[in-house]
Length: 177
Image (cartoon, rainbow, N blue to C red):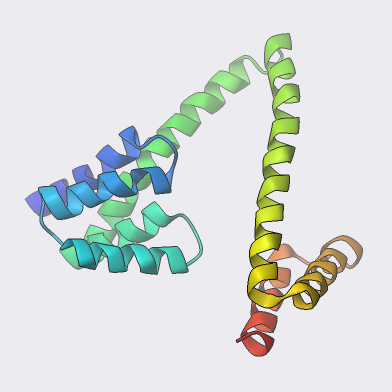
């Protein structure tokens, strides 16, 4: 039972103090897992990190699930994932309650109006980085082909984004490997 409590603390603490999401909490998780509790060595943790980076989704929860399973089986995985998610979940609930309380406030409306352009710029930068990475890895023709087909599939033919992603992954597996 104490092992589950240690698992919970090992992933709760980085979730609370690791401001910036999963990548910011990785060193904190590494400290807890390798230094404090000794569940893994640094090279083993590096392999788990590499595996977590290779899979889609939030890295902290993937690592928590794997490490929790290694330490405490299925229940250990559940405990570690719960400890990773709880700080963000609590913060989101509190922030949503605050937002709902003040949603009609002119200041909150102005703030959300001012945030939208910043989000648009950040998404644009992210799209550019994805395009540049794709261009370096697959070449200009393949990248433009995938961008145009994805755009048409999403905007003209209204295909669900999950199917567009699966199609792009399949194309890459068949033609770019």
